Amino acid sequence: MMGSEEESSSTPKRFTPLLQRAYVAFLTNRKCAFLISFILATIFYTPIYVASSNNKANQKRYGLGGPSASASELTSALRRKSNGRAAVAIIRVVGLQSEHRIKSNPKNQVQYLVQFKSHDYPIKAFRGTVCLLGGNASSGKKNGLIGKGKGSGGIDGDVTPLDTLKRELNEELLSPDWVNRIQQQEVIDDSKLGKTLYNTTSLPTVTNDERSDTNNNNFNDGRFPGTVRYLGTTLHSHTVELIDKPNPYAFYCALYEITIGIDQLPHSILHPVGATIQEGRLALLSQDQLLQHAKYSWGYEYTMETYFGKKSWNKQKGASVTEVDENIWETTSWTPLT
Image 1 (cartoon, rainbow, N blue to C red):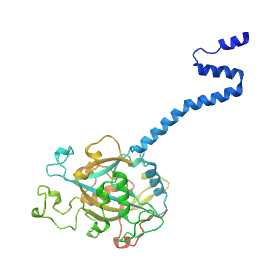
Image 2: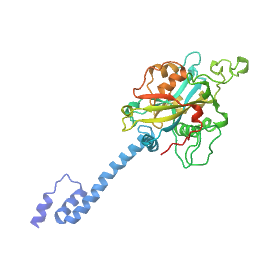
Image 3: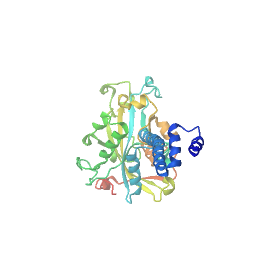
Image 4: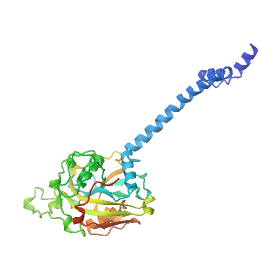
């Protein structure tokens, strides 16, 4: 009895009743003590693990790390031995007024919907940079050609650049109606106009008498909301130093121009709540901001320079863009090789 009283009196008083029982069991039965210790450890660490997992899930949901699907797409693209494929769009937003609380000059200046890459984007040099909306092609079981009317739906993967663009825009902008209404036969092919100035168009000039909105000069060239133009394809190349990877990476980029109205903007632009999408956040920028202040990812500074016909001041060292012969490109497989 004396020994039992001494053991009980030596138990630290600060232990809870459950821990106190475990302590006594440890002194009397080592096997039982091990089982109790395992149960206590499970109870203690499970909430910490769940909280950590939820934090990672939230980071992916709100763009801090980008969703796993997006990260895997980028990784697989960078590992390809052949040139990748991507389709992006310069999205023009017209009809902005002062009441929308978006900086715009008195002439109803066109703004451009772009994405800023997140602070933890996988490629460090591209963190916080401007990127055009769109993304990498998804490979499938059957290859298609990029020419008009070639390829068919209903297969795994993208057949044409427009397939890629629509899929990516739906993912990034949460499937707006205007994306789903884009049809191949309605896309205006301006790729043959020459690649010295993308911002020219083959559309006929619209006079004031033909316009329903006579106060908006942005519709003079016929680019009303809903107008989609294919501007051509370029080859974007990146050095190992820029992307910090073992091998350089290049991809063919099909460029489109889409004009939308203020009512077609994502809700997060007019009513920002702090959340981001995919690998970054959306923003509206003016031509001056795009040319004079923005720093770009994936060589798009050269794209915007050609589009506006003016110099882009912030170029990434190690990125370059070259022209692609459209006549040859029309017979090239769009679906990337894996």
